Structure formats: C-alpha cells, structure tokens
Image (cartoon, rainbow, N blue to C red; front, side, top):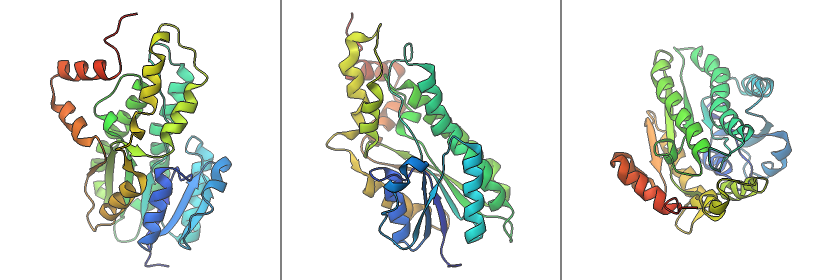
Length: 282
C-alpha cells in the first residue's frame, strides 16, 4: 500500500471524465479515492477495480471537503495527487442568464477547486522530506478563448487558469507540482447536462437565438469529439511522470482554439459570430 500513489479525484459520476480518470489511475496501480456528491455515489460504486474507493464529497461545502480530506489522510496517511475535476456547465446569454446559475458555475468550477487546494496543501506541504505532491486543475480551451452563449462557464474556467498559474509558483517552496489540464471537445455526459440545464430558461431579448444557444450547449459533443477515456489515459500518464508538465493540452479543437488565441480580435469575433448565428438581426 505504501508504494501506491494515493489519488483523490473529484466529480467522478459514471459517464463523466472523472470516472475515466479513476479507471486510468487504478490501471496504473494507484490507490484512487473517487468522490462525488452523496446523491451520485451510486454512480461510482461500480468502478471495476480493487484499487478504487468511493467517498462522498461536495466541492461547494467547506465541511464536506474538510471531512473528506481528513478521512483520506487518516486512512492512507497522505494524498499524493489531487485531481480537481468536478465541474458544471452554464449556458446562456450573459445579459439574461440568472445570477444564481452564474454563481453555481463559479462555486463549483472555480471556488470548488480552491476549496480542495486549501484543505489538501497543508498535508502535502508538511510531508517529511520537504513536502511534495501534485495538484491537477482541470481548465478548458474556453478558459483561454471564450465563446458566445457560454460566457459564465468560460469565465469560471478562466479563473481556474489564473489560479493554477499562481499556485504553480506559490507552491514551489513546498515541492508541490501544479498542472493545468486544458481539454478540448471531449465526449461525456457534460453536453447532456448542459441541455437539461437549459430547460428552465425562457429567453426574452434572445428568444430568436434559442436554437443557436442550444447548439452551443452541445457543441463539445460532436462526432469528432475526443473520447473521455482517451483524454483520461493521456493525462494520467503525464501526471505520473517524475516531473509532470505544467500544461496538458489535449483533445479535439485544441488546435483551432490555439489559432484563435493568436488571431486578431476581429478574426475571433467574426468566427464566433458566424458560428453561433450572431450576425443575424432580430
């Protein structure tokens, strides 16, 4: 047991990328603690490996995070790798999207990651021999290049990128590696959840763009999207290196977004306006 890496993963319900992270780490003979909110624990108990334990953890709750981290450290003695994967979508025009939906995205996607970091880092930093460990924060290509109809989600992922870049330098004195994962379009249950989340919204100013907004909600789930298992295995192999990379950029459309990030703003605006029907006048 002492030779196995202890890996804590958030957002592990079946059908998502976190579920595949757990399988990939377990296949590399790590001790994996797969977590999700209590209502979804049944979705992770069937992870097919003796190396995986399920644990309830709500990234939006201070007490839940604290309790889960203490449980893991008490049982296994340490946390070697934290995978901050839990995330939710938030689709809709910023001028009409309810603030509670925006707050939810920030609470899960950005503050949820930082909440885990603040509980895990003290254990990593005080390990014998000068600290050590790896923190992996999952961002997105849209954290670098935001798109219409998903400004709330994009902004929350941009915050993840900023926090991760800062942590990478701030945690150097404790020998803690910090990795930013930047996925492109990855096929998972994320698109379905996005579509379901749109059901309660009745746009007013943007009523005529309803179909375009729905298209954005499922945009990452097209036929060429990268399979979640492929992404997970790629990330896990790199994270387990003696010196993991600072950034892991992988998946469908990452090249397109890299091009857009270097393009003049008028090119980016033209592309997204055309792609999401914003050249049309109501």
